[in-house]
Image (cartoon, rainbow, N blue to C red):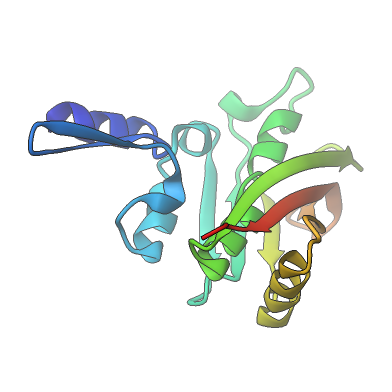
Length: 180
């Protein structure tokens, strides 16, 4: 059990749970048997976020809006003293997928399929990104997925403290109904 707690604390993607001398490995974060609110709180301790200084600072009750911030620290600076591009991308990685996983439920397969990032200016200070989908957008994607569309494209902007765009991220989310 101690090993399982250690693994869970070190990586939220893999949690080990021992029951009746059997070990079950949960390899998908959304399948963990914990509340959505707890999952969101645990994401702040996910090693790539925690060690890059990425923090979820706001999430709405329906899990359709996430606000993420990252302060400039010595461990996430590049050679030029600005935010490392990989950390800027990391702060944008899972949120559109997470919104769909939590709102569509277990009857849908949801994956990050592709992504691109366009850097507009060097990032200094605290970076902020908002990921938001309305219930209508989620339901529209569900209807399209039910009718055969699989790829859905969403954009987000990373802004600095002056609200100037530092980078633009485009995510392609794959959604498919599970065959029951």
